[in-house]
Structure formats: C-alpha cells, structure tokens
Image 1 (cartoon, rainbow over the protein chains, first blue to last red):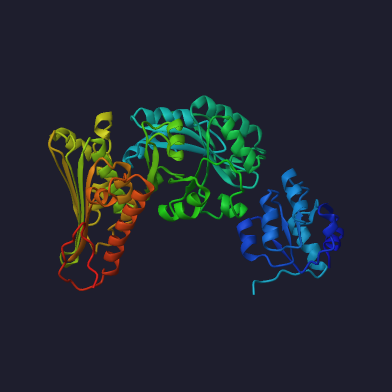
Image 2: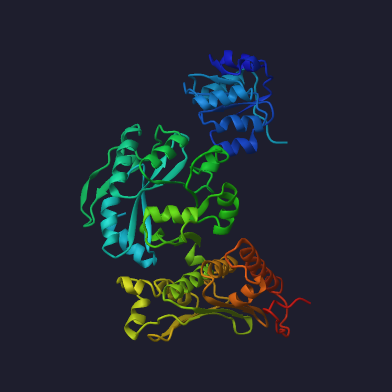
Length: 116
Length: 428
C-alpha cells in the first residue's frame, strides 16, 4: 500500500511532495494533538489530522511518517506546504472527515499499530 | 464572575494586580478594571484567544481602547453563535453587578487565526503575547503543536498552577529564552490567587510587564508559584515588603524543630516599621490604602496559613524601629503547607537587592546553615552579586546548604559545627 493508493481511496489530492507518493504506508494514526502524535505514531504511519500548522511537517519528519492526510477540506498554510515539499513529506487533502478517512483506510486493510 | 466578586477575591488573595482574560472577548475588562481599581489594585485588560490550532494565547493589553480594538477583530474571526442552554450565558456586567447584555459569539470556540497570526494581531494591538498554560496537554501550545514553532514572537510563557514554577522555568521559559509567569487561570473567584507571579516593577502596567519579561531597566520576573501551598512564597512576599519598607538589613530564619513538632519562620528587618494602627490593618486583607500595601499585604494570607496548621502569626513593629514577623506551624499538621522552594526564594532575595544586608538561616533539628549576602560578596572579591559569577556562586552556596540539609532530614540529632565563612550543613 502506497500513499498514492491512500489518496485514491479517499478521493484526495496530493498537494505536497507528489514525487514521494510511492512511500509505503505501514499503518495509520489519527490525532490532532501533536504531542500525542510525537509520542504514539509509528514509523511509516499515515497521519490523519485537521491540524495544518507548519509544525505538523516537523512531527511527520521526526516520526518518519509516510504521509499527512488533511481532512475536512482543509488546505495547508503556505509555509506548511513549502516545508512539506522541502522535507519530502507527501500531504494529501480530502473532503472526508477523520472518521470516514479512517473507515475507508481500514477497509483497505490499513491498521493502527501499538508502540512496541 | 461578577466584577465585584473578582475585586474582593483580588484583595483576599493579597494581589497587587491581575490580568483579566475572557475567552476570545474583552467586553468585561472595563467593569472589572473599575471594580478592582476602586480597591487600589490594578486589573490589566487582556484576552485569552483560541487559535485555529486550539492553542490558547493570552493577550495583555496596554489599555481599554486597544483591548476593544482587538476584541472587535477577534469577534470577526470567531465563527458561530453562542448556544446559552449548552454553553451558558455569556454575561456582560458592570461593576454594580448589573447585567448590561450578552455576548452572542461562541466564545468557547476557536478563531480562524493561526498561532502566528494571533501573535501578530496581539502585537499590532500594542499587547504582549503569552502562551497560556504551556504545560497543559489540552489547549497548551506544546500539547497541541508538539513544540514551540521556531521564530514565534512570544513575550513570555505561562505555566499553570499544576506545574511547580521552577520546573516550568526549566522546561519551557529558559530553553526559549523567555520569561516564565504563572497564574491561577481562575474561572471562579475562589481560584484567584491560586498561583501568582512576583514581579519587580514600578507600577502594574503592560509596558512595565514587558520590561519585566525582558529583564530591562531593573524590572524583572522574580518568581512565582502557589502561595497557599508554599511557605517559601510567604517568606519571599514578606521579605520583599521589608525591601519596600526601606530595610537595609533583613534576617530570615527558618527553624524546623521535630522534637517539639514546630516549624517557625522569622523575618526581621530594620525598615521604617509600622505604628500600632497600621500593624492591625496590615493583617486585614480589606484594608486598602496605598501606604499600607507596602508593608505587608501578604500577612493576612500568612496568618491564614499559620492558623490553619496549628500555629499563629505575630507582628512586632514600631515606626523607625523595623518589623519582626514570626509565623509558626505544627510540623506534622495535616494542613501545613510544605516549605517549598527556598532556593529560588533566597536567590531572588539575594540577587534582586544586593545592597541589602541579608542573613539567611535554616535549621532542621541540630543541623543547619547560615548564609549572608555579605559573606557571599566577600567570597566574590569585588564582583557584584548580580553578575553571572555572583548569581552562580550564590545559587551553588544555597543549593549546597539546602541539599546538605535534605540529605540529613531523617538523621538522628547530632551536634552541629560552627562554620567558617558561612555555616554549612554537617557532612559526616
């Protein structure tokens, strides 16, 4: 499963780092508290969130996440987009809610993973 | 919270000033300002703004006009209407406790402003931007966004009452090079004064606050914490009052006597002192003339803390002959506040007024130390106590003394030994 597959499943657009849409998606994590994501997301997870602040890119990079999915039709800030491109973090926007994105990905076999 | 109830709570808590912050609104700031102002305290108009990331940022504003301007801009950036049945009535009151109207916005919601935009808007309104309760996961900057974005132009960070002040400084303020303040985040009058910040300023105004945050022109943030939970903060408060009273010599003794189950705090100064009437009023939280405030507004709280723990407060003073404040408590009393952070208290007192001859003594059973600013100054050989070397030396000396005491806390009584330059705790 790749980021491109995820984008297709949620009718999303890859708005940053499309050249890395081939990143492997190894799991998923949904949260809007960045401190929580820093603590609990796993390597290779796609991260489902409504936060669009530039800090999300740093968190995704820190946790080596495969992509960020921005839900509910939210568009990232300009500096967030620029930083995502710079750090090669694919960003997908979708009009689906976090609940629906999680459901759609779950149907595809994507799972959350606990910290080992 | 009615303005009158706030003003009364400010007096009871012994505060000189508050920053009054509604969520995403400032339409009660004027009435609270008048009610608090009537008691010769200050209420700085402010606002706690929710950014689109759901981070809370406190705006401290210079005057009501700029608060009003920012209020209008926030209102335009705040979607939705209030639902009183669910979220409660958002009352706009005057200082006579009359309801003037209701704010119709959904103040509990988030604005459409990003964190950076919010900080910019606050600065454009002439205000100070302070990250609210950074130690909290919910609505705190670090909890919501993982870390403080580089380049964010904050003026200070605020830690909640849940985090010890010194921990807040070390974890949040210092790494960012920002001042750390603490506040009660009171949502009810009874919470006012739960956590306080001590500031060295000429007056309680926003420009003075900015200078204190930056440590400029003799202004500074001295420390803070929960006065009800820390006897060390009472010591700081009383001793700062001694400084205000023009003392050139202040002696502080903390005596822990497990054998008689007693903890006694003595603070003696050679300041201008108080006459009989002023003394009586100094322990009355509702006495409000400007003159009396300088000689011990913290005393009512200290009396409360002492009496709640099986002790009492004694004040002996004469005009021109200084003041002696003695508070004692029962060491084992369930309601006794912990001693708290004596190290910070002593550091603030030594370094903020190096011209005052300060003698600090802390005894626990037969263990103890005595430390004086004169000895420290002598050890520095001409360097001022306020220099980085002086601050480091003072901190190290206090820490060594306090750590020595702590490690002997459960030791059986042993004979103390006299010190040389200053007395240190006994090390076997």
